[in-house]
Structures are given as C-alpha cells and as structure tokens.
Image (cartoon, rainbow, N blue to C red; front, side, top):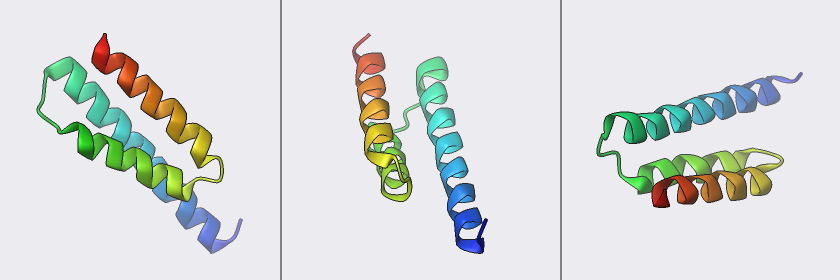
Amino acid sequence: MTERNKLTTTILRVLAAAYAVALVANISFGLGIPIAVVLLISVAFALLSPGGTVAFATVTLSVQTLRTA
C-alpha cells in the first residue's frame, strides 16, 4: 500500500469512528451534537471513500430512520 493510501485509510477510519461516537452519544446520552456536524462527517467520508456514494446514501438513510424512530 502506498503512503497516500495508508493516509486515506487512516482518515476514513477516524471519520467512521467519529461518526459512530457522535451518533451513539446523541442517541444514548441525549447530547446536543448538531445533526449538521454528524452529516458533515458523513460527507467527508463520502468524498474520500472510493465507494463513498453508496456509503453516504446508506449512512444518510440510517440517520434519517433513527431520527424519526
């Protein structure tokens, strides 16, 4: 793996972890993390990921479903 691919992979993992933490914190603890911040993480992931469009659509639909439940 090239140095650029390693960096991209690391960034994607950090973004995925940040998204998961923000989502769980909002749902479990009722923290007031604005949904725009959570979606911004998803957008950044979509822009960096090769399969980002599918991932972004999946994440967006999941968040929408959880927010309306």
